[in-house]
Amino acid sequence: LLSFIQTKVTSFIKWDLIRFLNENPNTIDSAANIARYTGRNVNDVYPELDELVKGEVLSRRQLQDMVVYSLSTDERTRQVIGDFVAACQERSFRLKAVYHIIRNMR
Image 1 (cartoon, helix red, strand yellow):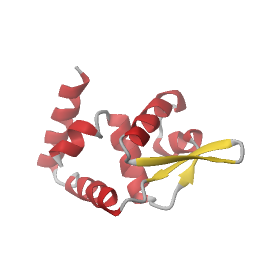
Image 2 (cartoon, one colour):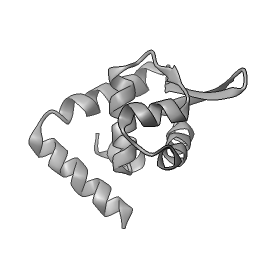
Image 3 (cartoon, helix red, strand yellow):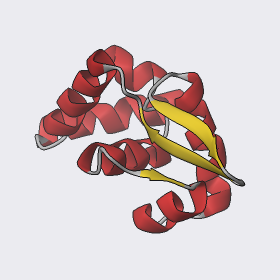
């Protein structure tokens, strides 16, 4: 999980996006709606979604005239995401994750 945090969950916005999509694994939606659901500004969410697509955590596709995002269909990726979200229930793990995110943001 440390590698996942260091390479994929490199911001608190990404953490929120990953958690939301893990809890709603069938979501296929626009950046604007995902931003609204996570309580984030859409202008902050766009680049984070695109980085998660590049990191193969999310998928992006064109649906008519709209770009939509969804959780990766790769089972191994979904398992790591699920393990990360589950581990976040423990305070000590959350503190370590926060430490690594802040360290990475410098």
